[in-house]
Amino acid sequence: MTFTSPSVSVRRTVRGLRWWIAAVLFASTIINYVDRQTLSLLAPYLKVQYRWSNADYANIVIAFRVAYSIGQTVFGRLMDRIGTRRGLTLTVMWYSLISILTPLARGFYSFGLFRFLLGAGESANWPAASKAVSEWFPKQERGLATAFFDSGSSVGAAIAPFVVLSIYFRWGWRPAVAIPGMLGFLWLILWRRIYQPPEHHALISDAERNLIAADKRDAISVGAPTLSWRDLLKFPQTWGAIVSRAFTDPVWFFVTDWFPIYLVAKGIDLRSGFVVVWVPFIAADLGNFFGGWTSGWLIKRGWSLGAARKAIAIFGGTGMMLLIPTILTYESSSVGSVSGMSGTAAGIVTIIAVKLIGHYSDLRQGTATHVFDPIMIVAGLIPFCGMILVLLLVRNTKATRQGLVREI
Image (cartoon, rainbow, N blue to C red; front, side, top):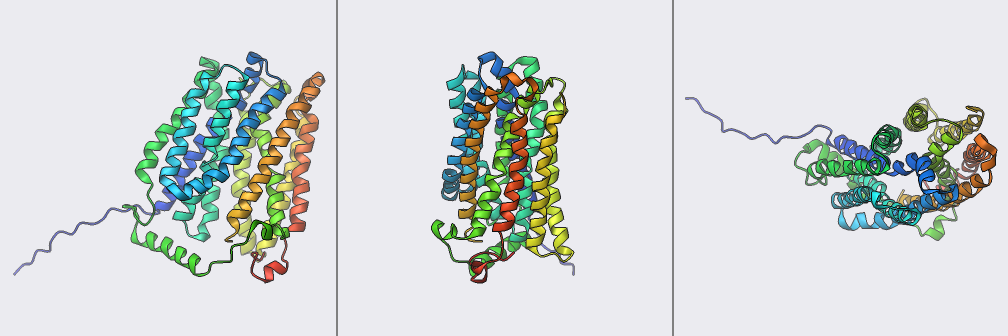
């Protein structure tokens, strides 16, 4: 007698689905940075067309930064309320629509308004992506996953000159702003199809779902006490985190917002200088992964976590001083709170720095190709000073022994 077994339907799954999610977040960050880089890349030409001074341009940049700084805190809470899938859908739709509408700008004030609205929309990308990583990745992989999607910022900034300037030289500034904005709507089709929480995703394997669920159970069972902002500000480690952002973000945003204007001031034609524009961003991307890999390698070689991380801080702080020679060329549970405070500090310092850059560079207009030389020197020295302060502040203290701050 022959028995025929009934057909068994096998559920289709995707191996390593969480890394496909990370790749989609990476793509979102690329588009985010292409959209925001349109103004800085077009600034040398818009300044002439609309007769902006460097101080005028600085004020437009500040409009973006103010909205961006406020938005990170506001939208961080919003993501928790409405969920990652819906939240990132709304924010990408918002800033893509603003990019498409920016060609309606007719002068200084309307440009400032559109950049403010763009900054508000784009600010939600990082809180949403970070929330997605926390939903999909076990704690031992979150650092790499975050570095992966965050590297989209430098990749996007590197791609932007080829996209934006190519369109500008052929069709003008309005298509150069609007066309990149359409990329977000294409991305939304992919996002809506692929993203669901791991608990409900149809394509996740049982092994991957159990891995993520087990990590979340462990996090709940070993929860650390939640501290108030006042308590956190008593710890030198908190100030170390604040200093690390406040002394580096302004320099990074100087490069992203002012580098094309700096190159033009040095006599470089952006039409033929695409390579020069994207070099700092590719270097930043390589440094991002090199730092993470080197830190892990040093730990495997027997270095303590604190020593390995501080070695990378020394390397980075010293490396930022290499900005200076460019003037000679050409003629825990409290992580969210600490991150928020450091981001706010970085935003405030960046806004002040942008205002000073615009004012001071206007005063030096008579120095021809040397307009930005003192600014570049300061930009190279500030991260080095920040590195020294971080090394002094981030250390094991009484709070470490009490379990309030993670040991290094």
